[in-house]
Length: 399
Image 1: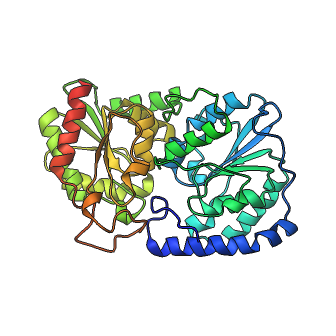
Image 2: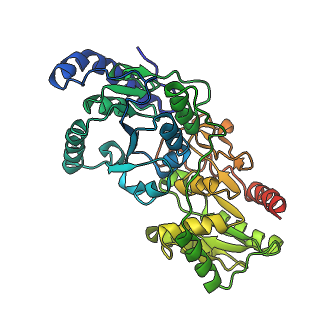
């Protein structure tokens, strides 16, 4: 029986479930193949001129799309006659046009992520029917997810490339060996290396385009709050909200970080987030004693938000899409990493400061939305002093 890797499925119960589904899928796959046969195996991957349509699955998080962003230009170089289509969730809608190398986009919010009901599953099956009619030549899952492997199989794409680290390798035509480096960027790089070993893909760092409209919106927003960037008054973006409660650092500690950065560096503190996260940014502002943060949550467009990240001298936040966006835009990052395995999702830049205490917690990594050990959380082990030290190093290097 397969043993799914802990890096991708941290919870032991979920790993046992994945192993069971893997064996169940092996048993039923011949029947599924008879009912929904894939087209012929197709052209050899080495014949790069014959592959005309490529589908990449990236229906996970915003940060996952960012980390795999260098894969798309590499695919365009490897398959000059092909159109690259990416299947993403709706929360990545605004980001896709800013990732080079993507020609077309389709949308699917996976019901196993959203927890959606009948309508979400109906949309999934509708999407599968539509994909079967698109006549893709090559399908790629850079995540290594059992469910994505099955999804690729159900689309009928003749060449299906992915990983077997969570099972379901029999749904693929090409299984890529997963090396010791389990960072999501490394998985994307392994895809390119397998499909097109002769394509130059160094340094393979995340990159997104920053539109002029985003730069202008950020400049106008900062000017409207009398912010003038200078070495003596750096701009520090703090993104205090987290999608999952288990990844939320203390509001009081964020406020103390803001106060100390203002006192030590004269920093202009900008709090970012969505409109729905304004309660978090407002709570941080109320806890500050001397700093006067600028609350940008919900106040700028997505492009304007990217402009703020790019204009900042430093970004501070937990494992999130904004952290990876800041990293891809070249902004120094201080990343506070808790339950997710740090070596798989850390920022790609070598200059990023990563603060984590996972090694002190036998329950880490985990995939719990809410920590089961309140009062003994891995994120709570991160001190304000550690964050200030990391921020100070980055700001001194930036000056």
